[in-house]
Structures are given as C-alpha cells and as structure tokens.
Length: 83
Length: 218
Image (cartoon, rainbow over all chains, first blue to last red):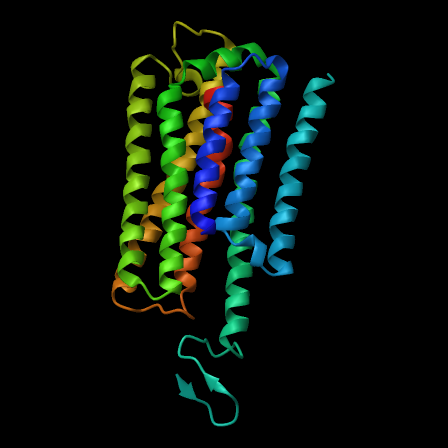
C-alpha cells in the first residue's frame, strides 16, 4: 500500500534529519536538512496529494509556485550574501 | 442520476455550466491547486525574510533555534506526518466505499491537529514565560542579541500563520465528517473531501520545512 510506505518513509526521513542535525556536518548541516525536507515534501506531493496522477495543468501550477519561491529566496540570498 | 433529453446521463452533482462530472472535477482540482499555490507564496515571503536575516545573523539564529524544544518540535513533526497519512486514508476509504473507516480517519486527523496545537501552546507559554515575545516586546535575558530577537519574531509569524492554517484545516475536515457518515459522497463524487485532504497536506508540507529551520539548524 503506497500510503503506508509513504508514511513510513516520512517517519524514517524525519529520524534521519534528527540524526543528521546532531552529526558533525559543519556548514553542510543546513543543506542536508533542507535536502531531506525536500525529499519529504516530494513524497507528500506525489503520493498523498496524488500529483503523480494529476493533469498537466495542475502540475504546471504547482511547479510555477515552486520556481517563484526559489527565485524569491535565492534572490534575497544573493543580495544579502554579496553586500 | 437523471437523464437529460438529448445528451448522455447527467450526474446529480454536476453544475449546469459543466458538461459532465469529469470536466467539473478537472476545474475544481485546478482551482484548488491554484489556491494552494497562492498559499505557498504567502509563506514564501516569510521564508524569504528568514533566509535573508539568517544569512546576516547566522550565529544568532543557530543559538536561538537551539533554545527551541527539539522534543516538542520533533513530536509535532511525527504528529503532522501521521495526520497526513490518516487524511489520505480517509479519502482512500471513501473511494472504496468504506465510509465508517473514512469518518474515523477524519476524526483521528482532527484529533492529531488538536494534539499539534496543544503542544504548540505549551511551547508558546514556555516562551512567553522566558520573555521570548515578538518584536519590541522581546525580553529574553539569555539571548539578548538583535539576531535572536529577529529569529523569534519570525518564529512567531511563521508558526502563528501555520497554526491558523492548522485551525482552518481542522475546521474544514471536521465539517466533512457529517456528510461522510450520511453517505453524501460515493466512489465517483467526493471532491470536497479531496480538497479538504489537499489543504491538510499543505499544512503538513509547510511544517516539513519549518521544523528543520526553527528547531534543528537555525
């Protein structure tokens, strides 16, 4: 059952993120935490929210939102870190 | 199901400006995803501020995030993930005609939402007791830096906005329990339940990013 597998995967990834936060990763810690969060988000979107079986129009909408969020955050990061 | 004079049978759930149920559901789904996407952009503004201030006050943000209770934050992560599963199970059950299981799963989801809010309130109460309040009301002696103040102000805005969405989602799902019990939905028609579940998953999605940023790595 896909939902049960997705649930277990999300719990395992949560534990992995918790473990990684207590490992000596240094400056990589944030990148690792956000990478794990992105994998979890992908599981929720694809399995629980049925994006796998969604129409092209629906996929275009959510992909546009994701691109806009990345543009905003990366733009702010580029500004602040190069002052 | 009634039969129109000239065309194919028209389902009872179809509004008159749609030709058939499939087209109506396509429109509703697209509308819901546009709404959810605009919700993510609402949070994106706060995430952008967080990214900017975190870059400017990296050490302060890290110290402040370590003051948050990892135990409560992690418990709430497990609670929301489990509630995402239970609401997915409710939808799955309605699609397979198991309405009792569906109603029970919705009840479990609302209860998990309440548990999340309960833990959040315990956390807020503890913060306020320590003088951790938003903006100019900030008076936490252990972390007096400007960066820590910005972190906790953003913490209140991010978790507060998220908590409002938890309350909204719980209301949405609680209202759906009655029609599920009363057989208002069947295998083909359950769009309100689908949208309620989608909204709840969005609440889970946002928390998936809030947890590492506010509790683990600043």
